[in-house]
Image (cartoon, rainbow, N blue to C red; front, side, top):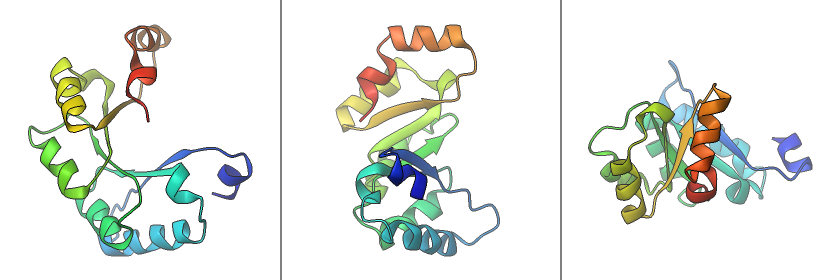
Length: 135
């Protein structure tokens, strides 16, 4: 976190609770972020764990959140709305035009993860990928 600040970077902080109770994970993340006043502007907190994100939202109502999905469930817009999350993170192979249209209607940013093939990244960028959907 200190290096992120020193280099004036932004980052995605993924919460991975594993066996930790969601509230405990959220409290630890809250403590780390509150010690850094710049974190609200430059750190996006994401997780596959809905309970962990909900706990963090209760503790930090203004912190930007992203819900992680491999392949989003049909109710993803209502999940993001309940969390007041601003971003949907999904496996790049699961991105569809339908998701993009719905995300635009909901004013939700879409970010894909993990593209290992350079040719696929080139196609994504050519289609407007990061320029179109990132905050």
